[in-house]
View 1 (cartoon, rainbow, N blue to C red):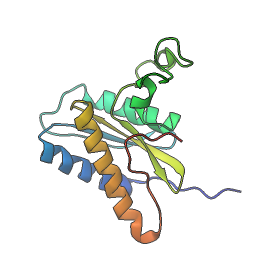
View 2: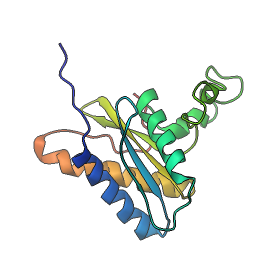
View 3: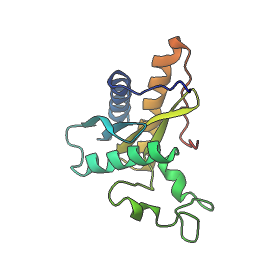
Length: 159
């Protein structure tokens, strides 16, 4: 039997707060979604003034990152991004209409080498969404540091 960890609201809130803080620091209005390992929403926050499309996009990014265990931008990173034309997963987003995102802003939450959820960021450009997402992961790493857990905090995550 395997022991697993579960992402809960307390950890999601740590990530949300760090994401909002980074968003304010860089001057962008974001929507942040955190999902569990099954892609089910734990927490969502749309900053005042953020785009009304943000919640659906952020949830899709978080769902994709958790479910496919990779940062969403890796799907379209040349030359081997699997969702690029003529590559193995070209058109994969059509399998999950409205739920699968193959662009920047979704990151799996990886604790002790296991994907336990995902975070999706929507509202900025790719660089801004990445900065906000990685700040959220870094905050989770700091939060879990005293309990001896490790969290991947880089932008390019593929498990």
